[in-house]
Length: 280
Image 1 (cartoon, helix red, strand yellow):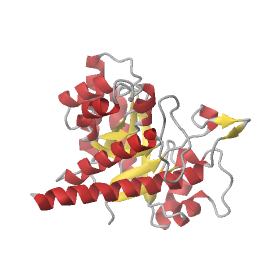
Image 2 (cartoon, rainbow, N blue to C red):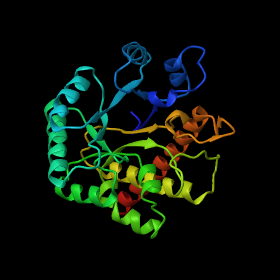
Image 3 (cartoon, one colour):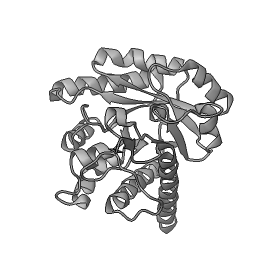
Image 4 (cartoon, rainbow, N blue to C red):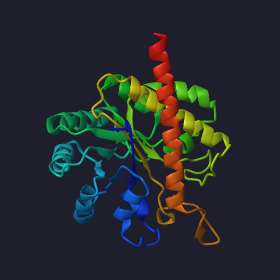
């Protein structure tokens, strides 16, 4: 089994042209390893994905501690590999946030399903400083790194990208799932080119590679593979930029390009970790 698995995000299909044989067949034909579904689950598509040998995982939102166990149980009962989670709204006190985290960690352990909390705006983990503090308090947290929210929302280049990167290292060490999206300092989702030399593309390569390195150094990860899912969302929710009424790029082709970059970053991480082990 490859240690990097690249899944297509079901939500990212919104607004794309119809696929001749349906989206699941297109995802399989494009070489993706699986699909990240959204809530509520499309049970027909889920069954089709499994029939084609694709992996399946999900996503959800948890607003209160009491929601954690039922959501985790439903995902486990559906046979999903893991869930990525939006947790809270970002307005919680530290004590309220701690109760949410405790409930998520307990639900993950009780139902034997990885629950990866997401670095996302309008959630408990929207802020780098607070997230680092929660990691110090709850070191067993594991993350879905949707880093464009921090790169743009917290303007990581302002004050020095390397300074910010060093600061969030405790989070990077715990990332086991990535939502692939590249932003620049002013826009959360931008189109890129093959071999793009823009500095923000280089920054995302660095972040992703370091996350992969951390996973490869983990002697006992919850899952034996790392999941990368391009999540390029439509203009209807103001993610994709539009010019003269049209989205700036083909999000399907951009998803394939981001997947290629992720595989290059993972290969680089494998080389680095292998070299360090040999050197030891």
